[in-house]
Length: 595
Image (cartoon, rainbow, N blue to C red; front, side, top):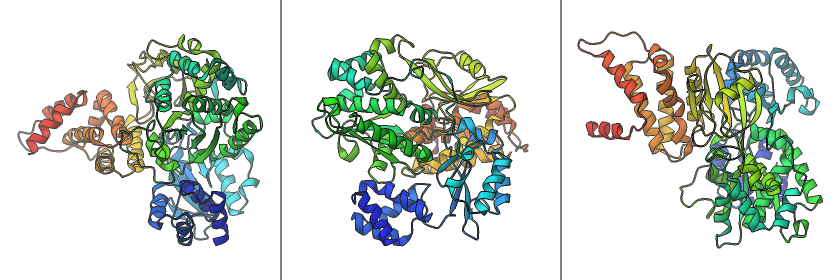
């Protein structure tokens, strides 16, 4: 073990910033992080053992106690549940002779649930030793159980178990044609870097991760910082359940994404870039490394790129199972080898990011678009979309539809058009933007996809009329409680209380007063949490309370009230609060009454 770990540390240049990558290799080899390994790493990397332990405990893919030689994790996303995940999970547990969260007595296999694996268009899905398993059914499970019991190495497993499709059903401005390798850089150098930034500005390109900050302004702010050491980071940690477009872009359009990162580096003057790839996309890692190697051979990465004087390279860093690392400051903390706890802002990454240096963090789709704009110009992009939302948006569509997959639309398209294209019928509602987004009912299908109406990072989960919407709310609320980083009390405690309150109502033990308490708790978590996770964790409840209060009421238990209790009045209060968009005045009044 000492020799193995010293070799890993040496290959990572004994850098504490590489702690996550070192721990990933140890976990893959031993199926846990041994105490002796922690002691040795503490000495080799010159960091406290307590810091290493805190990192191990933070990420769900690391363990301090042994897991099975085959670590099986089955996605617990609502889309997997809609495809019969629970029955399949129980069948798999029975076939393997191991309970959820347990390691089989012989140490060969362990089984557990995990958050969304980014395979919502081809579920039920899972992971085995980090590699994606898709379209799980009873025959596939029978085969997996047989292979595990025979202790067959993964490289001898049938390839169809690991097959991942792109499922691109509608392409547009960006997906119709890829730019030629190097074309964006040649165009940028020929036009001039400052002029290229103007083209990106004229295009109206805004961040495609969901926040929608104007890309050119972010790049300009970073380029104007006094420090000369700057960084470019591509955020490929799309952990939002129902989102998988970045997986497809990196599988089939990675060259263009890397090109966009390099254009960004030329603009801000960066020498180093990082692709932060979510741990669930381990299956893409070798392919992406090969593309980077090819770009280096072709003079598109490394020293003096295309004779321009630009020195720039890209490193891939794999996450380890933490949804919060999709938040840019938490991602940067993770890149530095730490637990992914969001930073206080300001300062923002453009002034103090990776290692305290100016850093641009953009989404995969944003860099893809930036490269195309560098070739085709700003007007090419800006002429499509709406006044405030330029260009196109790539969507991940899953749930109750005939053709789950990837769709690209100009901004301004109606939700109804999207649903018709993917074969969604008898729609009850759509979760737009994943659990942190907005749930809309079938009365809102003429709303438009745009920053000025329905903004989204790109996820649509469709529910038909056979579904109980509270099942989705229950799943999403448990997801946020599990993924809270625990840094701040409103989120750490609040999401746990939301989970318990939803459980109480869904299980039929709630009363009218519980709905009132639920809404109050939602507002507290939303308004006082440290970062975006807590600030949006209540969205599944708030947006469905507003549209489906009757559904919540239908789950309330039949109880007898003391004489004089006004049940209708209590329900009316709940209705009024559910429809209230600004609850701050009510919260202030409630706090005053409590005092």
